[in-house]
Length: 343
Length: 75
Image (tube, rainbow over all chains, first blue to last red; front, side):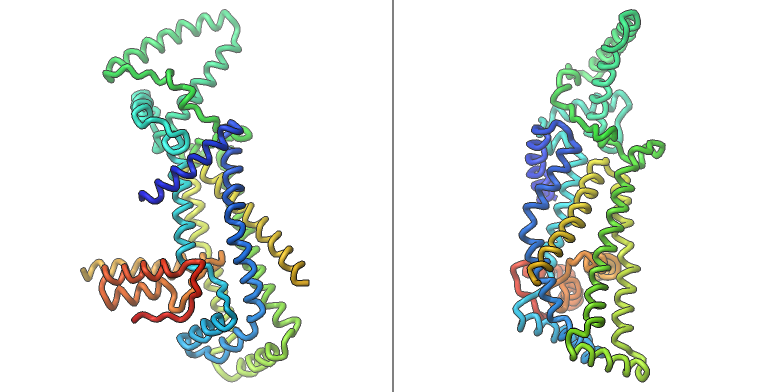
């Protein structure tokens, strides 16, 4: 947990800096995701390159897969030996996967409590304002978000009031005075002289992103259709990225079979075809079955991440959406560059 | 202790069935054979929940972008 808090703190500094530049939480998140992607570019570049390289040894790999199709243990051993011979390994490894998950959760922590991690506001002030909002009966699952909402509403009210005509203003002033005296009562009840309005500027975060309030949680208010736009876009971008990766894999195999680049590969395929009729365990079917399970199983995580995006403040969904878009973009561009280099 | 062992192993089984394929789809793969999760599972079965998990952690740390990977069965 402390590791994630550490990253959330670190990201908070970056995000706060970006927020200071632009003054809008949504655009700060977009810039933040671009920044992280650019920092990670060298790693994904190297990875994409080894992936291309692995296409070269693909037919050798097919031979191994065919040869040891009945012996998983031996097959994988041979594949690892092949990687060693070629001094390459297309996999990125498990540690980087775990680090990515840690980063994802850190962003969630950051978006959930932006006052603590982004604005680095004193915890005493935050606790007092949370208590205050709680007394107003406006507390939601995300306490700091509720505080920000309250402050935003205050700001909006004020600007509306300023625009109103004098006569109305006078009337409202009376009501406001009553409100203030009510609030004072509440403050007296809670036995501290904390006034949330003193910290209004500190606690305020501009969460308005093209008319969408990024502090909203989609499932908390299902009638708010605007709040669903970002999760829906996120779903669409996930579809595209999954499509893209499966398409690329398919293309790889098609190319290998269709072009007949190597006689060996063709021979292997012929043998496989002959074998098809005889034996029950067929290599291509094995591949198909594997692809099939991949297709089926790949639904678990998307559904999971979509449901997380629905119960978290929209800022998280926006970050994930940007991440997906950038990933699609990066993959297309890097592939093109590597292809051109190869030619 | 037996319960711990069972819980850990069912967690790993669940991961292997549901989460791992999705990660493979995103080109996140283990560098070793047997994979880190399989290795950890075997280690927990052989050495118990605590030592097995530690061995698994050690293996995952080895499975970083700078390692060469390869065939690495449980000893």
